[in-house]
Length: 337
Image (cartoon, rainbow, N blue to C red; front, side):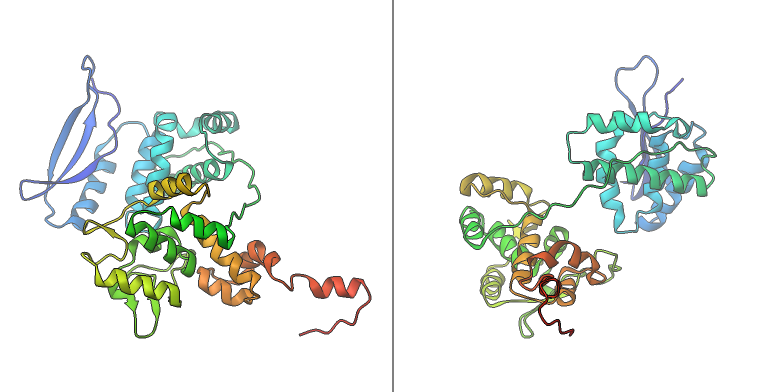
């Protein structure tokens, strides 16, 4: 008698593909690998075939793990898939064997207590769980689901650097790929994933522009815009292009850099200036707001759908922030426009 199967993967096998999962047999110390040949010969068809086989051939209970596995398979083609996978890795140990119907506030609060992260991170993870349960209900995989409690949505903190702090932090960046990343992050206000995905074919030196959105990627609420290349960044980009050994702009030893966090941690220790990849995005936005850049223009640079989010976090840094209101209260002439 075996326990509930774990999540499956689709792997290359005998010239084609196979669905692979691990099963813990009673009496065995370690789970055993089960592999089933698929008839499909291309990756997309194999993923679809595996999904159907998994959902129709598995009569085990619909635990949270099974719900999450099936849900992630259903969104494999969407940009949110990677972030959902990351969230599930953090959640799996606590939630994997839970009955969706048993979920309640007490259980969610207990989970929150196990996570040594900010409320915003725990909230995102629990929102991913709730979304998966909604999908399972709609797809009739489950008939009852519990209520997912969420931590309060706290005020977003906008950590940014002064110009001297950034110079010190950049001096702490030793590796060329890390220095280039830091300059792109500051001067384009781009999100980390967009920078690491950037390839040279989307760098237009003649027009002085970067296209942050790869061909074929659907724009989401986190838009990847076309942004200008300023003079300081242009010089760094030209030097990097001359020395390139990969199609990726941020590369190391000819390969794409998958994660830049360690370089930021090391630079923070060397410079005594703490910064993360997102710190540079916020820093660029704050500097632009301080210089009086209109919020709609800054919103375009940041890839916001409209300037409401931009106003919420960056308007207060503008030199004219609420100045007309203050003048009106003092009885000074108020002119619109």
